[in-house]
Image (cartoon, rainbow, N blue to C red; front, side, top):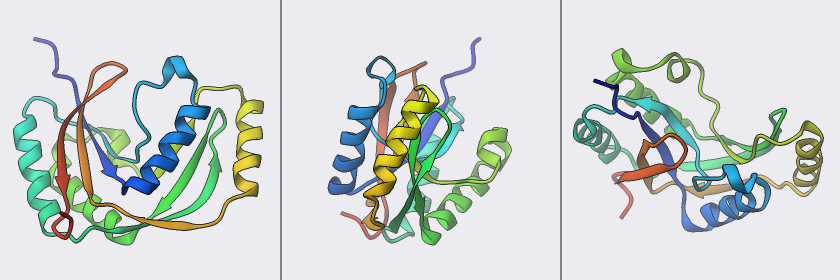
Length: 172
């Protein structure tokens, strides 16, 4: 029996931040490869065999947390793309608690250090990425947004299917 498609946990952004990042992604990500909206991944591969149990665990952990504030701290050149760097101690602590709950099921990618970011361009020629990075870095000003919750997705080999929106305890 094949392994079930993995689950992906991403950060839900407030409407203003999401619109800005998703607009940049739609403009700069190769159209044929852009199957998903702008996102900040917390986990790339949670166990897909029991989505209800994952939802239950993440919901219990999120319920105990106020909606964190997230700082957008810079524009990062990734070699073949561009991403915005994010920082949030409360979000990192929440991620650590989720990692603890799934420690035996985490992949090497999800066990390694976490560098939160939102990718707005990827899989382009390095010179194209360098030009966008220079343009975005020139006009960059640090900002902050509130994260009302997290989103759970099922990976479908390219596109993702949203399974749940899980609010933090202080979010409506």
